[in-house]
Amino acid sequence: MFGFFRKLKRIVVGVILCAAGYGLYKLLKTDKAQESLFDFLGEDNYLSILDKVRLAGDLLGWPVEFIRALLP
Image (cartoon, rainbow, N blue to C red; front, side, top):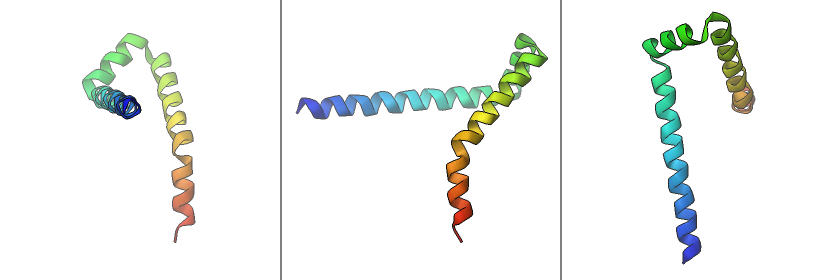
């Protein structure tokens, strides 16, 4: 019985963290937030971080693209 509540608690915490991450992502995608980050970090740091985030997205998404390429 208690194992069920532990699993449920983990699921709820996971959902909350995913929702918070998604909300932060949507917030940072706005033009005003990107402009503020650009001004705060400076051009070089901002573009460096942006390149690293894009690279991480490509590395995480390559299995999906690979499977799509194999499908007819």
